Image (cartoon, rainbow, N blue to C red; front, side):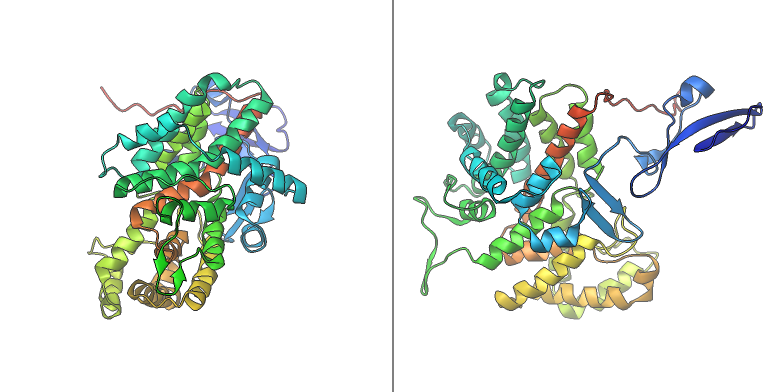
Length: 430
Protein backbone atom coordinates (compact mmCIF):
# COMPACT_ATOMS: atom_id res chain seq x y z
CA UNK A 1 0.00 0.00 0.00
CA UNK A 2 1.35 3.43 -0.98
CA UNK A 3 1.96 6.16 1.57
CA UNK A 4 -1.27 7.98 2.34
CA UNK A 5 -1.48 11.63 1.36
CA UNK A 6 -2.17 14.40 3.82
CA UNK A 7 -5.40 16.37 3.57
CA UNK A 8 -7.28 13.24 2.53
CA UNK A 9 -9.67 10.81 4.19
CA UNK A 10 -9.15 7.08 3.86
CA UNK A 11 -12.01 4.65 3.28
CA UNK A 12 -11.39 0.97 3.94
CA UNK A 13 -13.80 -1.53 2.39
CA UNK A 14 -13.88 -4.32 4.96
CA UNK A 15 -15.37 -6.70 2.42
CA UNK A 16 -12.09 -6.96 0.49
CA UNK A 17 -9.69 -4.76 2.50
CA UNK A 18 -9.31 -2.28 -0.37
CA UNK A 19 -8.23 1.22 0.62
CA UNK A 20 -9.45 4.39 -1.06
CA UNK A 21 -8.43 8.00 -0.56
CA UNK A 22 -10.61 11.06 -1.06
CA UNK A 23 -9.57 14.70 -0.94
CA UNK A 24 -10.63 16.93 1.93
CA UNK A 25 -11.68 20.40 0.80
CA UNK A 26 -11.22 23.05 3.47
CA UNK A 27 -13.82 25.77 4.05
CA UNK A 28 -13.00 29.38 4.96
CA UNK A 29 -15.42 28.93 7.87
CA UNK A 30 -17.01 25.83 9.35
CA UNK A 31 -16.42 22.14 8.63
CA UNK A 32 -14.34 20.81 5.76
CA UNK A 33 -15.90 18.41 3.27
CA UNK A 34 -14.86 15.15 1.64
CA UNK A 35 -14.84 15.29 -2.16
CA UNK A 36 -16.59 12.05 -3.11
CA UNK A 37 -17.26 12.93 -6.75
CA UNK A 38 -15.40 9.78 -7.86
CA UNK A 39 -16.77 7.52 -5.12
CA UNK A 40 -18.97 5.39 -7.38
CA UNK A 41 -16.35 5.19 -10.10
CA UNK A 42 -13.69 4.11 -7.61
CA UNK A 43 -15.68 1.86 -5.29
CA UNK A 44 -18.98 0.95 -6.99
CA UNK A 45 -21.08 2.33 -4.12
CA UNK A 46 -23.04 5.51 -3.39
CA UNK A 47 -23.44 7.33 -0.10
CA UNK A 48 -26.81 7.30 1.70
CA UNK A 49 -27.82 10.54 3.43
CA UNK A 50 -31.56 10.85 3.94
CA UNK A 51 -32.58 14.52 3.95
CA UNK A 52 -29.03 15.57 2.95
CA UNK A 53 -28.19 16.30 6.60
CA UNK A 54 -24.44 15.73 6.05
CA UNK A 55 -24.08 16.52 2.35
CA UNK A 56 -22.65 19.70 0.82
CA UNK A 57 -24.43 20.04 -2.53
CA UNK A 58 -22.44 23.02 -3.78
CA UNK A 59 -19.75 25.58 -3.09
CA UNK A 60 -21.08 28.96 -1.99
CA UNK A 61 -19.72 32.27 -0.71
CA UNK A 62 -23.09 33.85 0.09
CA UNK A 63 -24.17 32.79 3.59
CA UNK A 64 -22.50 31.05 6.51
CA UNK A 65 -24.27 29.38 9.43
CA UNK A 66 -22.76 27.89 12.58
CA UNK A 67 -25.67 26.14 14.24
CA UNK A 68 -23.74 25.23 17.37
CA UNK A 69 -22.74 28.84 18.06
CA UNK A 70 -25.97 30.39 16.81
CA UNK A 71 -24.11 32.36 14.12
CA UNK A 72 -25.43 33.69 10.79
CA UNK A 73 -23.46 35.82 8.31
CA UNK A 74 -24.21 37.25 4.87
CA UNK A 75 -21.01 37.70 2.84
CA UNK A 76 -19.05 37.45 6.08
CA UNK A 77 -21.02 40.13 7.97
CA UNK A 78 -22.88 39.17 11.16
CA UNK A 79 -26.68 39.23 10.87
CA UNK A 80 -27.14 41.39 13.97
CA UNK A 81 -24.97 44.12 12.41
CA UNK A 82 -26.87 43.97 9.12
CA UNK A 83 -30.32 43.91 10.73
CA UNK A 84 -29.68 46.81 13.09
CA UNK A 85 -27.43 49.10 11.07
CA UNK A 86 -28.43 48.64 7.43
CA UNK A 87 -31.60 48.67 5.35
CA UNK A 88 -32.97 45.70 3.47
CA UNK A 89 -31.96 47.25 0.12
CA UNK A 90 -28.38 47.61 1.33
CA UNK A 91 -28.47 43.93 2.31
CA UNK A 92 -29.89 43.06 -1.13
CA UNK A 93 -27.02 44.89 -2.79
CA UNK A 94 -24.56 43.06 -0.54
CA UNK A 95 -25.96 39.65 -1.43
CA UNK A 96 -25.96 40.42 -5.15
CA UNK A 97 -22.58 42.19 -5.39
CA UNK A 98 -20.62 40.87 -2.37
CA UNK A 99 -20.05 44.40 -1.00
CA UNK A 100 -22.23 46.99 0.71
CA UNK A 101 -23.17 49.89 -1.58
CA UNK A 102 -21.93 53.45 -1.32
CA UNK A 103 -24.50 56.27 -1.36
CA UNK A 104 -24.64 56.59 -5.15
CA UNK A 105 -24.82 52.83 -5.72
CA UNK A 106 -27.65 52.54 -3.18
CA UNK A 107 -29.55 55.47 -4.73
CA UNK A 108 -29.25 54.03 -8.25
CA UNK A 109 -30.29 50.58 -7.02
CA UNK A 110 -33.25 52.00 -5.09
CA UNK A 111 -34.48 54.08 -8.04
CA UNK A 112 -34.19 51.16 -10.45
CA UNK A 113 -36.26 48.90 -8.17
CA UNK A 114 -38.92 51.60 -7.77
CA UNK A 115 -39.35 51.94 -11.52
CA UNK A 116 -39.31 48.18 -12.13
CA UNK A 117 -41.99 47.51 -9.48
CA UNK A 118 -44.91 47.78 -11.92
CA UNK A 119 -46.30 44.64 -13.56
CA UNK A 120 -47.90 44.13 -16.96
CA UNK A 121 -51.65 44.73 -17.22
CA UNK A 122 -52.15 41.28 -18.73
CA UNK A 123 -50.53 39.75 -15.66
CA UNK A 124 -52.90 41.77 -13.48
CA UNK A 125 -55.80 40.24 -15.41
CA UNK A 126 -54.35 36.78 -14.81
CA UNK A 127 -54.29 37.42 -11.04
CA UNK A 128 -57.88 38.63 -11.27
CA UNK A 129 -58.88 35.30 -12.80
CA UNK A 130 -58.13 33.47 -9.53
CA UNK A 131 -61.03 32.86 -7.17
CA UNK A 132 -61.21 35.16 -4.14
CA UNK A 133 -60.69 32.08 -1.95
CA UNK A 134 -57.22 31.44 -3.43
CA UNK A 135 -54.35 31.59 -0.96
CA UNK A 136 -51.88 34.44 -1.67
CA UNK A 137 -49.02 31.94 -1.95
CA UNK A 138 -50.82 30.04 -4.70
CA UNK A 139 -51.38 33.26 -6.66
CA UNK A 140 -47.81 34.42 -6.02
CA UNK A 141 -46.21 31.19 -7.21
CA UNK A 142 -48.36 31.10 -10.34
CA UNK A 143 -47.86 34.77 -11.22
CA UNK A 144 -44.07 34.55 -10.82
CA UNK A 145 -44.03 31.54 -13.16
CA UNK A 146 -46.16 33.59 -15.58
CA UNK A 147 -43.52 36.35 -15.54
CA UNK A 148 -41.35 34.00 -17.60
CA UNK A 149 -43.90 34.30 -20.41
CA UNK A 150 -43.79 38.10 -20.30
CA UNK A 151 -39.99 38.31 -20.21
CA UNK A 152 -38.86 35.09 -21.92
CA UNK A 153 -37.65 36.69 -25.16
CA UNK A 154 -36.04 39.58 -23.32
CA UNK A 155 -33.48 37.46 -21.47
CA UNK A 156 -30.29 36.11 -22.96
CA UNK A 157 -29.15 33.84 -20.14
CA UNK A 158 -25.56 34.06 -21.41
CA UNK A 159 -25.56 37.86 -21.21
CA UNK A 160 -24.41 39.01 -17.76
CA UNK A 161 -26.02 42.45 -18.08
CA UNK A 162 -29.41 41.02 -19.03
CA UNK A 163 -29.18 38.43 -16.26
CA UNK A 164 -28.47 41.21 -13.75
CA UNK A 165 -31.50 43.12 -15.04
CA UNK A 166 -33.55 39.96 -14.50
CA UNK A 167 -32.34 39.83 -10.90
CA UNK A 168 -33.40 43.42 -10.22
CA UNK A 169 -36.71 42.92 -12.05
CA UNK A 170 -37.86 39.99 -9.91
CA UNK A 171 -36.80 41.64 -6.62
CA UNK A 172 -38.75 44.77 -7.61
CA UNK A 173 -41.91 42.99 -8.75
CA UNK A 174 -42.29 40.41 -5.97
CA UNK A 175 -43.77 42.91 -3.44
CA UNK A 176 -46.27 44.15 -6.05
CA UNK A 177 -47.31 40.61 -6.93
CA UNK A 178 -47.62 39.71 -3.23
CA UNK A 179 -49.75 42.80 -2.51
CA UNK A 180 -51.97 42.11 -5.53
CA UNK A 181 -52.34 38.47 -4.44
CA UNK A 182 -53.41 39.63 -0.98
CA UNK A 183 -55.94 42.15 -2.24
CA UNK A 184 -57.31 39.58 -4.69
CA UNK A 185 -57.88 37.15 -1.79
CA UNK A 186 -59.93 39.90 -0.11
CA UNK A 187 -61.80 40.79 -3.29
CA UNK A 188 -60.71 44.44 -3.18
CA UNK A 189 -59.15 46.67 -5.91
CA UNK A 190 -55.41 46.57 -6.57
CA UNK A 191 -53.20 49.50 -5.60
CA UNK A 192 -50.36 50.36 -7.97
CA UNK A 193 -46.84 51.03 -6.63
CA UNK A 194 -45.98 54.57 -5.57
CA UNK A 195 -42.47 55.38 -6.80
CA UNK A 196 -42.18 58.17 -4.25
CA UNK A 197 -42.13 55.57 -1.46
CA UNK A 198 -39.25 53.36 -0.35
CA UNK A 199 -39.23 49.60 -1.01
CA UNK A 200 -40.73 48.50 2.31
CA UNK A 201 -43.00 51.50 2.81
CA UNK A 202 -44.40 50.97 -0.69
CA UNK A 203 -45.32 47.38 0.11
CA UNK A 204 -47.25 48.43 3.23
CA UNK A 205 -48.90 51.16 1.16
CA UNK A 206 -50.04 48.65 -1.48
CA UNK A 207 -51.53 46.50 1.28
CA UNK A 208 -53.36 49.28 3.12
CA UNK A 209 -54.31 52.05 0.68
CA UNK A 210 -57.76 52.68 -0.72
CA UNK A 211 -58.52 53.24 -4.44
CA UNK A 212 -56.99 56.48 -5.60
CA UNK A 213 -54.03 55.97 -3.28
CA UNK A 214 -55.82 57.35 -0.25
CA UNK A 215 -54.90 56.12 3.21
CA UNK A 216 -57.38 55.26 5.96
CA UNK A 217 -58.91 58.25 7.73
CA UNK A 218 -59.57 58.10 11.47
CA UNK A 219 -60.93 60.55 14.04
CA UNK A 220 -57.33 61.71 14.56
CA UNK A 221 -56.75 62.32 10.85
CA UNK A 222 -55.15 60.24 8.06
CA UNK A 223 -53.50 57.03 9.29
CA UNK A 224 -49.98 57.27 7.89
CA UNK A 225 -47.53 54.40 7.78
CA UNK A 226 -45.33 54.80 10.85
CA UNK A 227 -41.53 54.80 10.63
CA UNK A 228 -41.35 52.06 13.28
CA UNK A 229 -43.63 49.86 11.15
CA UNK A 230 -41.36 50.32 8.13
CA UNK A 231 -38.30 49.55 10.24
CA UNK A 232 -39.93 46.44 11.70
CA UNK A 233 -40.91 44.96 8.34
CA UNK A 234 -37.60 45.98 6.75
CA UNK A 235 -35.80 44.09 9.52
CA UNK A 236 -37.94 41.01 8.94
CA UNK A 237 -37.06 41.14 5.23
CA UNK A 238 -33.36 41.32 6.11
CA UNK A 239 -33.53 38.40 8.53
CA UNK A 240 -35.21 36.25 5.88
CA UNK A 241 -32.97 37.33 2.98
CA UNK A 242 -30.93 34.11 2.83
CA UNK A 243 -30.27 31.02 4.90
CA UNK A 244 -27.75 28.88 3.08
CA UNK A 245 -28.90 25.61 1.41
CA UNK A 246 -32.38 25.32 2.92
CA UNK A 247 -35.16 23.37 1.19
CA UNK A 248 -36.47 26.19 -1.03
CA UNK A 249 -33.01 27.47 -2.01
CA UNK A 250 -31.94 23.96 -2.93
CA UNK A 251 -35.08 23.63 -5.06
CA UNK A 252 -34.30 26.92 -6.82
CA UNK A 253 -30.75 25.81 -7.60
CA UNK A 254 -31.88 22.36 -8.73
CA UNK A 255 -34.51 23.74 -11.10
CA UNK A 256 -32.02 26.30 -12.42
CA UNK A 257 -29.58 23.46 -13.08
CA UNK A 258 -31.93 22.16 -15.80
CA UNK A 259 -31.57 25.41 -17.75
CA UNK A 260 -35.09 26.53 -16.89
CA UNK A 261 -35.96 30.25 -16.93
CA UNK A 262 -34.91 31.97 -13.67
CA UNK A 263 -38.49 33.06 -12.93
CA UNK A 264 -39.62 29.42 -13.13
CA UNK A 265 -36.87 28.48 -10.66
CA UNK A 266 -38.01 31.25 -8.30
CA UNK A 267 -41.61 30.07 -8.62
CA UNK A 268 -40.54 26.57 -7.58
CA UNK A 269 -38.84 28.05 -4.53
CA UNK A 270 -42.06 29.85 -3.58
CA UNK A 271 -43.95 26.55 -3.78
CA UNK A 272 -41.37 24.84 -1.56
CA UNK A 273 -41.45 27.70 0.93
CA UNK A 274 -45.21 27.34 1.32
CA UNK A 275 -44.81 24.10 3.30
CA UNK A 276 -45.60 24.30 7.01
CA UNK A 277 -42.28 22.66 7.84
CA UNK A 278 -40.52 25.53 6.06
CA UNK A 279 -41.83 29.06 5.45
CA UNK A 280 -45.35 28.37 6.66
CA UNK A 281 -44.21 27.77 10.24
CA UNK A 282 -44.95 31.31 11.42
CA UNK A 283 -48.59 30.86 10.40
CA UNK A 284 -48.65 27.74 12.58
CA UNK A 285 -47.27 29.69 15.55
CA UNK A 286 -50.11 32.22 15.41
CA UNK A 287 -52.71 29.47 14.94
CA UNK A 288 -51.36 27.75 18.04
CA UNK A 289 -51.35 30.94 20.11
CA UNK A 290 -54.96 31.52 19.08
CA UNK A 291 -55.78 27.91 20.02
CA UNK A 292 -54.21 28.33 23.49
CA UNK A 293 -56.44 31.36 23.79
CA UNK A 294 -55.45 32.68 27.22
CA UNK A 295 -52.42 33.12 29.47
CA UNK A 296 -54.27 30.93 31.98
CA UNK A 297 -54.00 27.96 29.55
CA UNK A 298 -50.25 28.19 28.92
CA UNK A 299 -49.18 25.86 31.74
CA UNK A 300 -51.55 23.17 30.48
CA UNK A 301 -50.08 23.28 26.98
CA UNK A 302 -46.51 23.37 28.28
CA UNK A 303 -47.31 20.16 30.16
CA UNK A 304 -48.73 18.63 26.98
CA UNK A 305 -45.55 19.56 25.09
CA UNK A 306 -43.43 17.79 27.73
CA UNK A 307 -45.64 14.68 27.87
CA UNK A 308 -43.97 11.93 25.77
CA UNK A 309 -47.37 10.31 25.23
CA UNK A 310 -48.94 13.48 23.82
CA UNK A 311 -48.61 14.37 20.12
CA UNK A 312 -48.81 18.10 20.86
CA UNK A 313 -45.76 20.09 19.70
CA UNK A 314 -44.95 23.64 20.73
CA UNK A 315 -44.56 25.57 17.47
CA UNK A 316 -41.76 28.11 17.03
CA UNK A 317 -39.18 26.29 19.16
CA UNK A 318 -36.07 24.47 18.00
CA UNK A 319 -34.48 24.52 14.55
CA UNK A 320 -33.04 22.01 12.07
CA UNK A 321 -29.70 23.86 11.98
CA UNK A 322 -29.44 25.93 15.16
CA UNK A 323 -28.60 24.02 18.34
CA UNK A 324 -28.40 27.31 20.18
CA UNK A 325 -30.53 30.46 20.13
CA UNK A 326 -31.53 31.38 16.56
CA UNK A 327 -29.57 34.66 16.01
CA UNK A 328 -32.46 36.04 13.95
CA UNK A 329 -34.82 35.38 16.86
CA UNK A 330 -32.63 37.51 19.15
CA UNK A 331 -33.01 40.47 16.79
CA UNK A 332 -36.76 39.97 16.54
CA UNK A 333 -37.18 39.69 20.30
CA UNK A 334 -35.60 43.11 20.73
CA UNK A 335 -37.75 44.44 17.91
CA UNK A 336 -40.90 42.99 19.47
CA UNK A 337 -40.13 44.74 22.75
CA UNK A 338 -39.62 48.00 20.84
CA UNK A 339 -42.88 47.58 18.93
CA UNK A 340 -44.76 46.93 22.13
CA UNK A 341 -43.32 50.15 23.53
CA UNK A 342 -43.80 52.41 20.51
CA UNK A 343 -47.09 51.03 19.19
CA UNK A 344 -48.52 50.50 22.69
CA UNK A 345 -49.18 46.83 22.00
CA UNK A 346 -50.59 44.69 24.74
CA UNK A 347 -52.54 42.11 22.79
CA UNK A 348 -53.67 38.78 24.14
CA UNK A 349 -51.44 36.93 21.68
CA UNK A 350 -48.34 38.79 22.83
CA UNK A 351 -49.14 38.04 26.47
CA UNK A 352 -49.52 34.33 25.69
CA UNK A 353 -46.30 34.31 23.63
CA UNK A 354 -44.42 36.15 26.37
CA UNK A 355 -45.40 33.62 29.02
CA UNK A 356 -44.50 30.66 26.78
CA UNK A 357 -41.13 32.26 26.04
CA UNK A 358 -40.43 32.92 29.73
CA UNK A 359 -41.15 29.31 30.70
CA UNK A 360 -39.21 27.78 27.80
CA UNK A 361 -36.07 29.85 28.43
CA UNK A 362 -35.92 28.76 32.08
CA UNK A 363 -37.26 25.19 31.92
CA UNK A 364 -34.60 22.46 31.90
CA UNK A 365 -36.76 20.32 29.59
CA UNK A 366 -36.50 22.87 26.78
CA UNK A 367 -32.92 23.96 27.53
CA UNK A 368 -31.52 20.41 27.55
CA UNK A 369 -33.16 19.73 24.17
CA UNK A 370 -31.97 23.01 22.60
CA UNK A 371 -35.59 24.08 22.14
CA UNK A 372 -35.01 27.81 22.01
CA UNK A 373 -37.45 30.21 20.34
CA UNK A 374 -36.75 30.50 16.62
CA UNK A 375 -37.49 33.25 14.10
CA UNK A 376 -41.01 31.92 13.44
CA UNK A 377 -41.99 32.35 17.08
CA UNK A 378 -41.42 36.11 16.95
CA UNK A 379 -42.10 36.98 13.30
CA UNK A 380 -45.76 35.93 13.39
CA UNK A 381 -46.49 38.03 16.46
CA UNK A 382 -44.75 41.06 14.92
CA UNK A 383 -46.54 40.69 11.59
CA UNK A 384 -49.83 40.55 13.50
CA UNK A 385 -48.83 43.78 15.24
CA UNK A 386 -48.26 45.31 11.78
CA UNK A 387 -51.88 44.46 10.91
CA UNK A 388 -50.81 41.90 8.31
CA UNK A 389 -53.24 38.99 7.96
CA UNK A 390 -52.01 35.47 8.65
CA UNK A 391 -52.34 34.19 5.03
CA UNK A 392 -49.75 36.80 4.04
CA UNK A 393 -47.07 35.67 6.50
CA UNK A 394 -45.35 33.29 4.08
CA UNK A 395 -45.64 35.81 1.24
CA UNK A 396 -43.68 38.23 3.46
CA UNK A 397 -41.05 35.50 3.76
CA UNK A 398 -40.97 35.25 -0.07
CA UNK A 399 -40.33 38.99 -0.46
CA UNK A 400 -37.37 38.80 1.92
CA UNK A 401 -35.96 35.52 0.58
CA UNK A 402 -36.25 36.39 -3.12
CA UNK A 403 -32.90 38.18 -3.15
CA UNK A 404 -31.22 35.13 -1.61
CA UNK A 405 -32.64 32.90 -4.32
CA UNK A 406 -31.48 35.34 -6.98
CA UNK A 407 -27.98 35.49 -5.46
CA UNK A 408 -27.80 31.69 -5.61
CA UNK A 409 -28.97 31.72 -9.24
CA UNK A 410 -26.20 34.17 -10.11
CA UNK A 411 -23.64 32.10 -8.22
CA UNK A 412 -24.78 28.88 -9.90
CA UNK A 413 -24.65 30.50 -13.34
CA UNK A 414 -21.11 31.80 -12.72
CA UNK A 415 -19.80 28.36 -11.71
CA UNK A 416 -18.15 26.81 -14.77
CA UNK A 417 -18.37 23.37 -13.13
CA UNK A 418 -22.11 23.52 -12.39
CA UNK A 419 -24.15 20.63 -13.71
CA UNK A 420 -27.70 19.35 -13.56
CA UNK A 421 -28.69 18.09 -10.10
CA UNK A 422 -29.05 14.30 -10.13
CA UNK A 423 -29.05 12.54 -6.73
CA UNK A 424 -28.97 8.73 -6.65
CA UNK A 425 -30.98 6.32 -4.54
CA UNK A 426 -30.87 3.15 -2.47
CA UNK A 427 -33.27 0.92 -4.40
CA UNK A 428 -35.41 -1.35 -2.17
CA UNK A 429 -38.12 -2.49 -4.61
CA UNK A 430 -38.67 -5.81 -6.39
